[in-house]
Amino acid sequence: MSFKRHLLVFSLVLLLPGLGRGQDFKEWAVRIAEYQKWLDQVHADPFRFWTRLDSSRRPHRLYVGEGFYGADHGMKERFIEIFSHTIAGHPEKYMLLDIFDSETGLPVGEFGWGGFELYPNGPLPMKVQAPAASGIR
Image 1: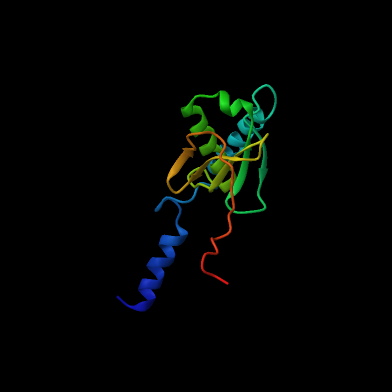
Image 2: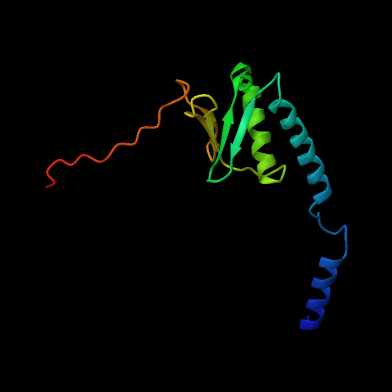
């Protein structure tokens, strides 16, 4: 086949709708809007699943409230997944999250490449220690 014919076939494939599955931007926007509406509901009283989001660093820091602690593990995981999808702006993609306690500011879990994880002993203090200076003068 000649170059012109290849170009024509390639152009037709790109321009004709329905030949390939396109990206459903409207469907994604609707689902993300539903997620955002639900997150707004669990942000307010009486639920208080989360109190704030710190987007100034990566991964984002999500501060969770008393409603989060009262939920069962499955609900906590679903909440974090929906929050991650919403921040990513896509119902099939995720955003990395560090989960912090809103009252103490201590880390309580994370959502990332390994999935959803809550630390076993609740909030863990973040201790920063200088390396030992043994033998250095």
